[in-house]
Image (cartoon, rainbow, N blue to C red):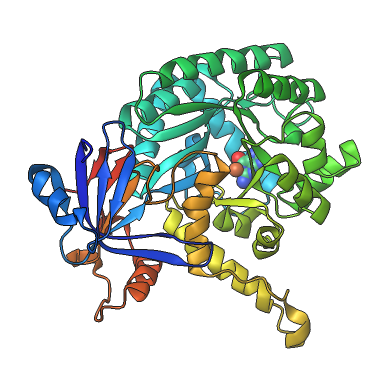
Length: 451
Ligand code: GUN
Ligand code: FE
């Protein structure tokens, strides 16, 4: 018998396939000292009782009505925008960026302000069950490093990008990089500093090359960032084919879609994640598959800013890797539960259509719906695969990144009157509120507890 540092006992839900949930009833999860699941044991297995006896003092057993779920992967969050979440959702993307968002982000040159917002957003995401987050910070190198430090300190697996915005035509002087060379030098310094910081963490923090989106960057910056991503083998994130305006802007500038333009600059890589992608054509999607680039679907944000519902089932059927993102504050909610719910709702509206002046047959796009099981898969296993990290599944050789759900909390009790675990899983996905998330663990460490 191996030497485990902890053993957890309880019923867990994890993806078996994109459409199916694996229910592990009363299983044991044996964790090693680096926070990995090294053994998963079913009650019928011989070892089960022996392990329980040997590890008597190290076993954490769930109570009746409590369940393990994998921690969520939020593949697209603007940490500074937490300060304006829930507001400013009344105007189109271009105006929203210029009127509200760039002025807000410009305030992050003030490290005291950055500290307040960044501490809170990391804690808030953890409390909502998000164990891994792919963050946009701002153009400011120091403040962006602060965000990476808070992830390191609070135990969240944070992937953090210092944003690059150097195009004077599409940015204002209150908020842009000083010039292209400074933008690239600051990005390189940032990559080196975060890689150093990572050595002090158990869960890992990662630097991310982050051209905000094509409009805000010069060709020279995009090219330089592609080279930095290759030199340091980093993650890459950006916004891609998000709205009519943005998609059209790129088409005017490059006579091609975002995907091919980004690819020309070396920005579509195995470790690339592109937010939104609502207007991806089939050949763009094929390019994503070929390069290993993932789509981050941000359904709440899309309802405000994307002028469309993304054909997510179609992209998935073409083999594109897909994850979910909150897109705070284009999306108002810090909860991936809320986004999983909206992903299902939006897909149903795309399938049926919404314009009642059209006959039913012409109203929607057939085969567009996804199920809550698929939304869960995007939020967990597929999010992990998008980042090429061993996260998002409760299985051997995956990190112990877990949320413990208590369905019996008095102020948020789930309506569970029967014992069908498939139904209980669906009720959790649709009805859980933050108070039901009683503990959150990342890489074998407890990072949030309600009690
Ligand atoms: N495109 C460029 N920047 C942003 C942003 O902050 N949010 C969203 N939703 N789209 C963007
Ligand atoms: Fe965004």
